[in-house]
Amino acid sequence: MKPNYKFKKLIKAINWYPPYLFSGIKVIKYSEDFKMFKVRLKLTWYNRNLIGTAFGGSLYSMCDPFFMFILITNLGDDYIVWDKYSHIEFVKPGKGDVFATFLLNSEQIEEVKNTVDSSGKHVFEFPCEVVDKSGNLIASLKKGVYVRRRDFQKTTM
Image (tube, rainbow, N blue to C red):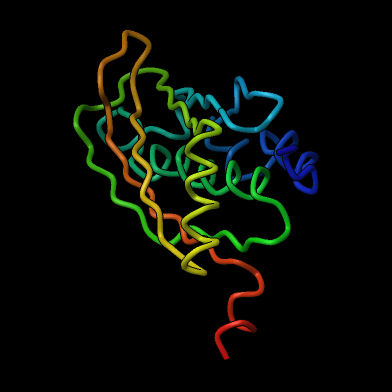
């Protein structure tokens, strides 16, 4: 399945999105099929907390939209996709640049599609890790993403 390019310009412009631009967050790599994003939080004076480590809100922000983006661009216009919930556990202070990679493979996306096609809607949970440049775990995150067929309400009434 070809990705939905409706959001292609938005995704390419995300590094200019003010909350990312001014938080030191940058998409440093993504796949052309929009199934993978790698994001960096560069530690600067304006995203440090009172003790000089990465502000927790910035660590969360760098992880916020990417599973939703992957599903929106790959499922197409027949599906509605929304972030539903998240849980973040801060494991270790972020004392330098940190990174997160978001990846859903074709099989996972097909599983989402099949589940939603059979049930009409579902909330999927995806794990993510924020690591420093040495690979040490900084934060662990779980994102809940709601997916519904656009015609679900029409067929259930």
